[in-house]
Image (tube, rainbow over all chains, first blue to last red; front, top):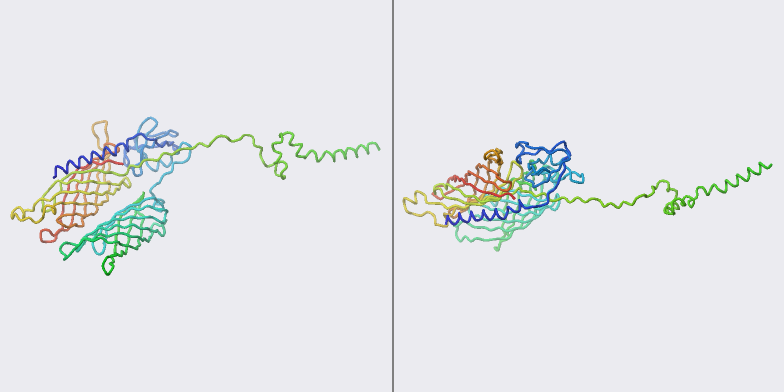
Length: 251
Length: 232
């Protein structure tokens, strides 16, 4: 059993490497940028502490190989590869002389971005709750959001899945409140010690609200409350309160 | 008398020629009739510059190739986990990380191990758990912080970026017929020999409340693992 598992793990790893390697090393067209400052510093690694080992002179060009967080891996005309910081790359220009523009991951990005994702801990109907979400923004105020979660309680465990719309009321503010509305599904697994415990899945609808707080760079805190209405097949519908708080980031 | 008549005639001649000098048709003789329309329009013909060359050069279009982002890290790992009261056993899993900044990353991990027997079970020959209940499956959602970034060197000619990182988060552990809310924390070391490849060594503690052996207690389940990931 364990041996088979090891083989599986090894095979998966090799497969992953095979699948992903061409994607990063394949020939492609790179963006060429020109240095307009006296020089562009190249670091040995993608971090502020890595030493500068090379400089690119004014009016020389670099090819941008790829980006990792706030650092760009570039190649000079002489074939030297190194890492340039986001702040330095802002001062380069394209071949037609226009400034090189890219998303910075700053406060402006917090106001307006394409995607965000995050993780939460909290409570769902009194049970411990772990949740993750992702969202796709239509504009700075409206986004489509999907969330999955698992609740772990004394009497039952289960999973939740939600999809809905979120409206951010003041996206430009550091504290930006929002309201949300959507539908979902909950799968409840009562603990085996209860009599006649049967797993069940129910449709839900929710309404909620919360607040986002911009921390720094691409980070923000998010706390929210959702009132879930669980449409059961029994005579009475159920309600469940969801409280959660966590970290999120945009990209 | 004669001179008076000559003056009158000259004045009459000047009066007749004067309108001609400002006449558009006279001006257009030198412009081959091209600006006839302008001239015959109102009196603003003096401001309109004559068109000398037709601009036939197309504006240069710069195609900006998309910059590839390489912030995700996916991989497999293998290690040992000490499941409290149930012995130390191999564990294997998958991790997916997203690097948000040079300092912080999110990481999700799913892993599985198999619990052995407690000393009570070994001595009494009474089985507390069934075979399927001994399966120890856990997942974590964690936030990592690259605590000590640096470089590692192999010989004189090769340098690899590296980092010690701290990691902590929460998740769930499915064990002994129940899923427990689990808090994890730990530290690891990552070395990046190529832009797309990384190796990890991680030590992590998974803490959850357990009442399998009668009393409810917090159990510490220490895990040590090595892993390989690829960036994409």
